Length: 440
Image (cartoon, rainbow, N blue to C red; front, side, top):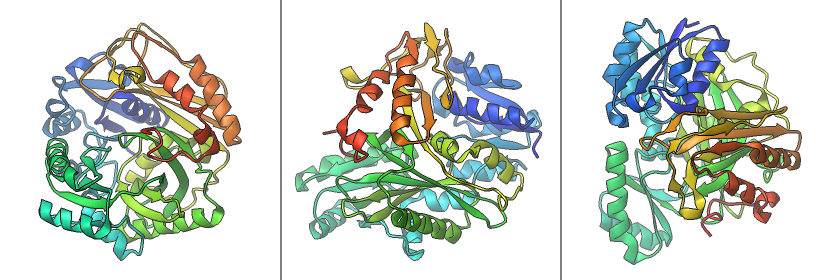
């Protein structure tokens, strides 16, 4: 087992990694930007080092500085969390070359699945159904020709995309020029790659994802599925496990598709395969995230498996062969954002004047904020994740309502009231909420 790990991230996921390491008796090293000098992940780590100013490209994406600190402090491995460098194959390769273990999949796998066009080809080879689309779109005329063939609406997507970025919807022929240019610009700015591909836009779909855990010895476990259909502009706002609409036959088929996929690519570590389920209950592979997901706690709550600790164990060579997984009950996660839904989800920054976290059995608040800390405008607006578990979905919804009512964050606007409203919405209570319902 590793004796010291560098945490190459910030916010709640950095805090989560440090806590997992503490429980395993592993020392941690944090890196931070100047605005984050008093952040919780800095205060909690055994050692902490500044790597630059506020902008992520000058700090949390500064691979050279991160690797130098890892070597200087005698770290054996680096955990990238999610976002930032978590799916950066060049960083994973650089860790390998520096003699450091990258806690995640192999760089070759990240490259292969990070290219959404290549991922679609791999899934087709593995006989996993994919959303109808067109890879390697050379120009706008080719895109228009494909649209004429399959019909509207369509999605333009960044081949190197993720996190809901680089996606534009084309409803009719007159939308092409503007949407094409915006998709290219966002792809270039977010991923430094303008390559685009097309997908048929499936309306009224469920977004269902499957959590996998694979070791270096070829063992693969399926740790259930999550329903992530509550979204705004392709960003998830609430997740739950399991997806209550699935029958056992559909669930078994979904798991079989996922297992075929990870075996095809020789996957190692924790990963997530994302699927769309249409109104006819057909499943289509959308993408694979070769990292830990923001919503991993709902899987941990229903399986009682610590995904962070198992990521670390697998990276150190441990086997999952004897890991028994039995899903039970129902878990829900609400992403608490520093935004004002009443004002068009305007971001909110400033000092946290007071924080009270909810408590009680099977209630968890993963966060990096504390009374007196400051929310910076430089980073993602998520300030925490509130997760609850109960034996049934109905009980879990009631528990989440109670937890949201107890959560107090003063000094900034948050989406707490939005979530309370959502939990009382008829379609959510029925379990029929789809990815487009929040917009309409």
